[in-house]
Amino acid sequence: MRTALVLLFLLALAALPGALLPQRELNASETASYIEEHGWWGRLLDRLQFFDVYSSVWFSAIYLLLMVSLVGCLLPRTTEYLRAMRAGPVLTPRNLARLPHHVRAETDATPEEVLATARKRLRGWRTVEREEADGVRSLSAERGYLREAGNLVFHFGMLGLIVAFALGAMYSYEGQVIVHADGQEFCNSGTFNYDSFDPGLRVDGTRLSPFCVRVNDFDATYTGVGQPIAYEADIQYQSGADLESGTWRPYHLEVNEPLRTAGDRVYLLGHGYAPTFTVTYPDGDVRTKTIQWRPSDETTMLSQGATKFDPPGVTDSERRREQQLAITGLFAPTAAFHGDILTSTHPGLNDPAVAVDVMRGELAVEAGRSQSIFGIDQSMVEAGRLERVARENLRVGEEITLADGTRISFDGVDQWASLQVSHDPTQVWVLGFAVAMFVGLGASLAVKRRRFWVRVTPAAPDDDDLRRTVVELGGLARTDQAGYGEEFTVIAGDLLHREPEGGKAR
Image (tube, rainbow, N blue to C red; front, side):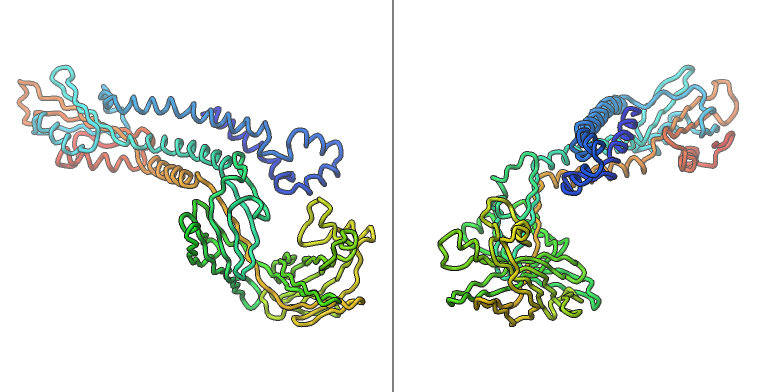
C-alpha cells in the first residue's frame, strides 16, 4: 500500500508537465512555436518527451508500476479474505470486561436456554459455539464480512476500469465529418470519408462498423441575444440488413442524444453555413457550388471560407491553372455593415450577406500538397500567381461582373451539421466496472465489521442462590465504534430480557 501511495504521488507529479506545457498531440503548431522560442531548453524538453507526456516512456512506466502494485496488493488481500471466510469467528477473549462494550448479568435461565436465545437473536451472524473449562460455554459471533468484500470489489473494479480504458485506447476510434443538411449522406466505409479521424493503436481504418447517415434538415434555436438553446437535425440511417435492403430509418438527432447504431455513436456537435455561388463564364457556361465555410466567431456565426472553381472547357493544364477562380471572404447570417466592413449581429439566418474577394490565377490545388478547403494558398498570392480581381459586399440575389464579362452571383445559403462518430467496444465493460466500484465503495462505507461474544457460566451445584447462571456479553467493532454501542445495548437487552444489571455497556 505504501508503494501504491508513492506511485500515485509520482503519477500526479508526472502529469504536471502535461498541464503546464503544450502537448504535441493536442496542438502541434503551438508546441513547435514553444520549442523554437525557448531554444536549447525547448529542445531538451522535447528530447525528454515533456511535450508528449502521456505517451512518454517515464509516464508509462509509472502507471504500469502502479498497476503491478495494485495487483500485488489485491492478490494477498483476496487470499486473506477467502481464508477468513473459511475460518470461523475468533475465540472468545478470556477477559470480556476489557472490551469496549461489556455487560455482566445473572439470570434464572439455564445455559442451554441462554445460548438458544443467543442463536435466535444473532441469526444472520456467523456463529461458533465452544466448550470451555468447568462447564463454561461460549458463543462467538461476527458480522460485516461484506465490508472487506466491498473494498476488494472497489479495487478490482478500479483495476478492470484501467484495463478497459487501455483496451479502448487500442481498439476505439473517433472521427468528425461535415454533412450538408440538404439530404447529403455520409457512410462509415473508410477513413477517407472523414474530415478528421483519430484511430486507436490497433485500428487501421479497414474494418469500420458499416452504416450510413443522411442529414435531411437542421434547425438551430437561439435566444433573443443569440445564445443557442437547441441544435436539432432530422436524419435517416441504415445499418446491418438495412444496407442490403436500402431501408432508411428516421431519427431526430440532438446534442447529447446520440444515434446508436452498429456499435457506434453518432453525435451532433454543431453547425455552420454554406453559401452558394454561381459563376457564369463569358461563353455561357455555368458552374454552381455550395461549400461549407468555417465559423470564425461562434457567438454570431460570422464565417470565413473559400469556394474554388476550375474554368470549364479548358484542356491545357497551364492555361487552366492561370484561369482558376476562388471566392474568399466573410459570411454573416445576420448582416450589419459598418461602412464597407461586414459583421454579424446574430447567429440565426435572418439577413445573410457576404463580403468577398474574387481571386484569379493558380490555386495550387494540383500541387500535390494538402490545402485547407477554408482558404487559399497564400504562397501563390505572395508569388503573384494568384491575384485579386474584385472585392464586393453581396446580399442574396446580387452579383459581381468581372472585367472579362464573368458574372458571379450569391444565390443563397445552406446549412451543414458537424457529426462525430465514436466507436468504443469497451464502453459496456467500463460502465460495469464503474458500477462495481460504486457498489463496492458503498458496501465498504456502509457495512461495519463487528464481533459479539456470549459466555455462559453455570452456577455451582451447592449454590443456593436462585440466580443460577452468569452471563457475560462482550462486543468489539473491528473498524470503527460509531453506532455499535447502541446496537450492542439492544442485543444485550434482547438476550437478557431486561435492562443490563450487574454491569454496564461501556
